[in-house]
Image 1 (cartoon, helix red, strand yellow):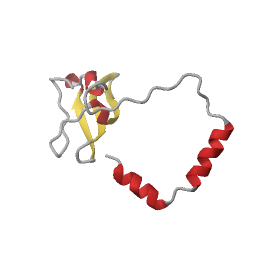
Image 2 (cartoon, helix red, strand yellow; image 1 turned 45 degrees about the vertical axis):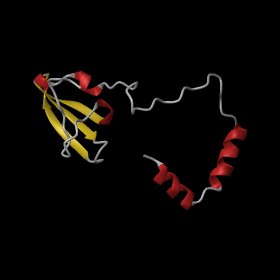
Image 3 (cartoon, helix red, strand yellow; image 1 turned 45 degrees about the horizontal axis):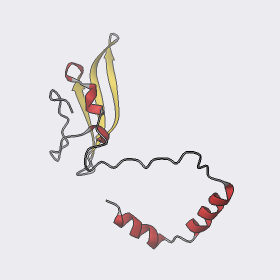
Image 4 (cartoon, helix red, strand yellow; image 1 turned 90 degrees about the horizontal axis):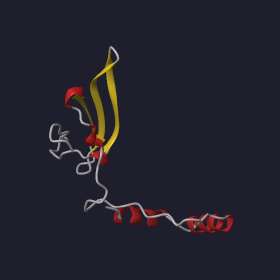
Length: 111
């Protein structure tokens, strides 16, 4: 986040770039005047919106460092590993055996 700009949720937590869902510009005479930021707070899960004066806007607000602790990295893809028809059928068969209680248990185990 920029030292000039701080988008803060109603719960008091500072919004990070990974929490920004959407942003856009309000234009006046071909120049941006306001920046619209829509976010979801990771603490309280509240969906919020904020207008920021373009003069104070810094695009680094949208950047975040994925190597920071607490931020999981996406798993690396294995090159050349294509999914064939047999794997799709096996997955569909295993998925048909999953019941609603299994999904509830899975949802409870997620952070």
